[in-house]
Image (cartoon, rainbow, N blue to C red; front, side):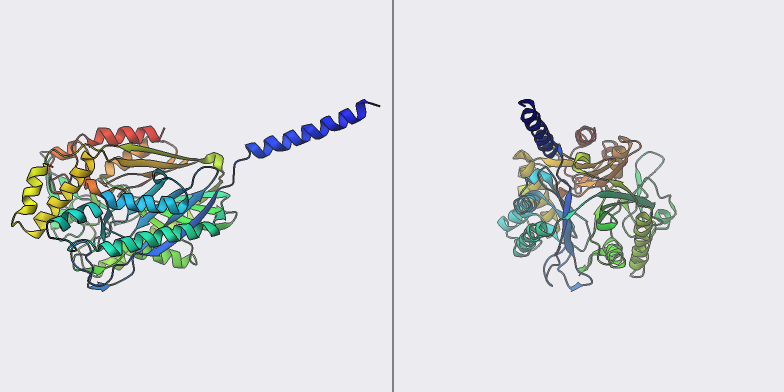
Length: 455
């Protein structure tokens, strides 16, 4: 008579304990939200090489917020030339507050359109100090876009959707990318193949080292797609420099795909394309922009059609982040740069000096660049700083054989071009003292970080 209630209580207790621990151990389902904000400058506002004289198509800041049983993760990409120094810090800090996360879990990239905006409060402050305020940066506009993005991130959280599957597909892009640096028999750069080229020797030369694959990463709730990210490495320029604001051929292709997929949010990121551009296939004519856009759009379509889905849960999700101090170029000498800024040098020379000084002060203050990765089962979304050479992207992929590494560069634009160690002895524009603000030793520092987070 005593055993029955005892047994009954034991069974209830066991069931209760089982349910308790089951709930405790079950990971929270992944959810994502998307955001998009207009980032188009007003007419007359400075863009990369001239004041904006007309808007051919609008610029945007767009991205995703990933919610799980860890702190939120945000990936954002902006149709601007570059975001650097205190500019990048402000972007990441404001987004982090909006998403209720930390800045090291926020990755902000520029897509690097050459008729886009520069976002660098450090360089802007130096120019202001030397009487050149407002000539290269529209501070009120920059602040407005950052605040609008933060507001959009915060608002997006209310409409986050559950994710059950991850999709991945890829396709080759035909006749877009080519390496910019054509070496001679002596191992030195003999021809620089710019984003647009009419040089017969540059056009005839082989494509050189590129990554031909466009990769597509999509998030799904069952059979319903929620968002797609695409990755491809090339300078996204057809023609530029007169202030005709455009998202360029990559942005045009992205918008076409988003329209085809009935408004599915499409976020495109630029890979390590510091030494990769369309110069072999682009003569800079107006007619080439839609042709290049069509080639990109076709690859995006094929990658989407090649997509294979796999189940995804919080157990398959991991975020890693490492801060690295990029070794500064020896040509950055504070007194020399200030002397140029105080001289009667051209405004272009002063602007270069201001950018160099900004990075020098940023580095001397101990500020570091972020290297991060979002690991989703067998897919790795790698985020890297600077105008990075394609060799880094290829090396990263070789570290995860049988898996997929999707690289996005242009996260910290303050460093300028980041070449390989040998490239600094080969000559060429990208590793010149004008274009690069790091030393040849940067390869060892960055590759160490990349190896660490891709373990």
